[in-house]
Amino acid sequence: MSKTVIDPFQPDQIQRLVAEFGSPLLIIDCERVRTQYRKLHRALPGVDLHYALKPLPHAAVVQTVVALGGWLDLATTGEVHLARSLNIDAERCIHTHPIKRDIDIRNALDYGVRTFVADNPDEVRKFKPYADRARLLLRVSFRSPGAVVDLSRKFGCDPEDAVQLARLAAKLGIDVQGFSFHVGSQAADALKHVEAIEVCTRLLAAARREKLGTLDTLDIGGGFPIEYTQHVVDIGRFCAPIRKVLAALPKRVRVIAEPGRYIAGPSAIGVASVMGRAKREGHWWYYLDDGMYGSYSGQLYDHARYPVESLRRGEPLRPSVLAGPTCDSIDVIAENLMLPELRQGDLIVGRAMGAYTWASASEFNFFPKATVVAVNQA
Ligand SMILES: *Cc1c(COP(=O)(O)O)cnc(C)c1O
Image (cartoon, rainbow, N blue to C red; front, side):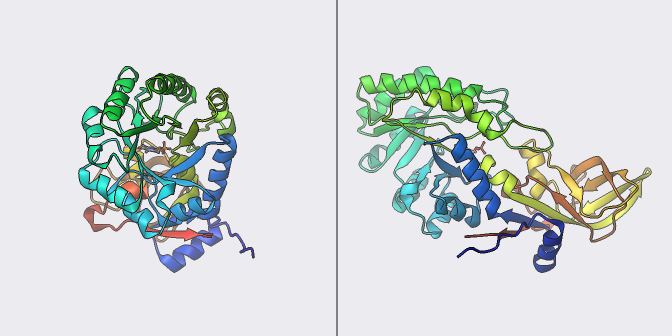
């Protein structure tokens, strides 16, 4: 039985959803989640995709990914609780935060998660009491100044220290399943992935020679880029060099990835309404019910620029300012945006707003976070 798929990103559907659920809204299209998952799966054949919940920890996305045969990357106790509340088989989940409290480890173990990440001796020792149930991926650092968000500064051990870390785990009786890395989010190209895969392949071989664990897994992290206001290469082309180095891996090595942004980003739009307007120094300022402290927080934390447009069409277009609702002056979404003259209640749509948007929103000034609606669920 096939349900009709509607496109909730079309103006008439956006208006219908705002009429029903109010504003501000974050509209998730599960059909686009499927499309993104399938595109990445085709670009990385044979790689198990663990959706990283962090950019959009929402049940609809999680369930859509799992229904496609996908896997999950959990990093916090809150994410463990979300997966658990959805009755997702814990075998499909790994826990990848390199720094955890004992209670976080126990919460994940209790759910049934078996694979964890560590990147330093103290963290490896935390698993000694759980050596019978937990196994480790050791996270290696590869600095990536080219990525918009360099995730190898805060986490990961030096490649030169990785085998020593594996020796410590082996000495404590903890199985080392393999190595992981995350080159940074919204990577400009796949060169860092390639370098990291090559180094980790050598680390796997070196640790295997010393029989330091199962050593049959390579986790290539996330970082797969999406289009915002700037063009990026298509994912098939982006992944071509990755496919090439992966082909040289021994067949017994299982390769996994942790895509977050690539799955979530294009799968949601933000919809906000004009609350009021004022003409200042000859320009219209439009004050929306969502802003930098809400879904547009990604413009600050994630350094993203979302393509924004008005649903109202008309002429003339004039440089205008879109501001958020709070009383803070930093709460400005866009300046010099070419817009027709807007009125109270008009809708503003931000595209590619699924990743690191609603997830990092606050309720500063008591403006509630956007309501989330998921369309085209299984
Ligand atoms: C944030 C994060 C991801 C997701 O990264 P994207 O660049 O959004 O794909 C994956 N793994 C870990 C460990 C992360 O911290």
